[in-house]
Image (cartoon, rainbow, N blue to C red; front, side):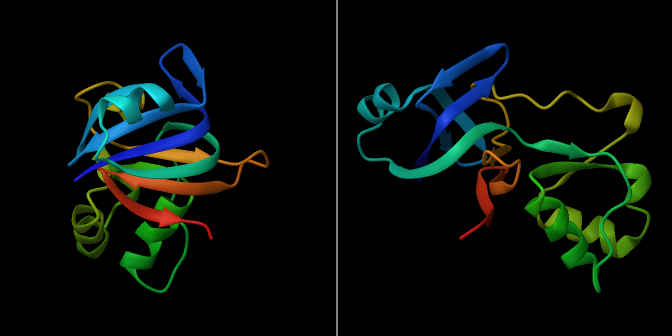
Length: 148
């Protein structure tokens, strides 16, 4: 199902679009543009509107947060707006399995790509409010965190 994620502002590449949107189909970005443009282009899409700034998912570059289980440690990363972690911090079979189940990217530190929003790219998105708090995280096209 195609979903359009709208926000007060969308940042991708060097561009910033006020009232922007990202259309997501499966695990990939179908289109980026203004909310009005994407709603017209994809009239049957589900629309999720978020307050704040929508940008690419982040890379969690330090040790994973402490939590009782590997699943909860990965979920804490997702709640922060990160959709990727560095492999040196995913140091157990349980953490690797939890990352794989949630489609969190595990990156070599010397080959970590800069997160980006691009058509046909992997749909890893995060929305932050004016205080810097993560409002929503989309990992590989799935909404994996939202603050109520």
